[in-house]
Image 1: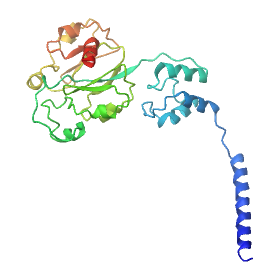
Image 2: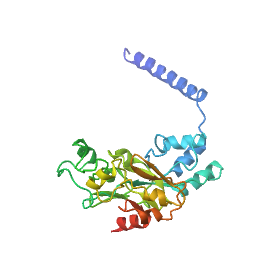
Image 3: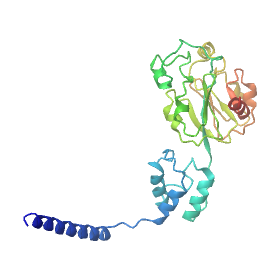
Image 4: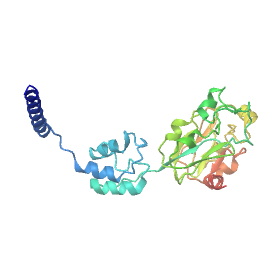
Length: 270
């Protein structure tokens, strides 16, 4: 009998607390918008964070709350945006698709080496050793760290240089975060002309280190019919808002530091 009473009391207290919690959950419950679950189901579930929110759950809540656009998921692209827009009862705003691009062409044949690297195949590890083996301190190290973090098989290492297949790229930005040289940038998918160099060295130094880097001659700047070039820190850059992809700059560039999309596709498919 001495055991029965404590068990009865504890059982009664448990039942009382259970009823109390049940009532409290109903009184203080926050109604959840059913569209959140619908939007979440429509999202691809990559949880890459490219949208700026903590995973697909966070994005779904933000879209329903009106804090994020219906086309915020770069991984899902237009098909997902259309489904989400239908759930939210709005039209999909036309937006520019962006893809990651490696701004370097200094492969094993074109860029000089300071030393032979035989360590861990990770660009961040190699970068610790005097900025890496490349004589150009801005060049791609080619260890494939960007490739390792890409979940969409969009990156290849070709002759010591990372090359991104824009058809597979979802602009999740993981490669951008992983690159210790900061030479991967997002550019418009439709952009066909790209300055594939990121060196801020003077032309003389560039020539000594790499045969295909931008030497700051400004021939592209002078020949662009749309004045789409910006020249700063010894480097020519394209204003994609002004560029019409005429390709004149690529034809005139003496070092071929400016590539066209056709050349990029050839490199990927080699």
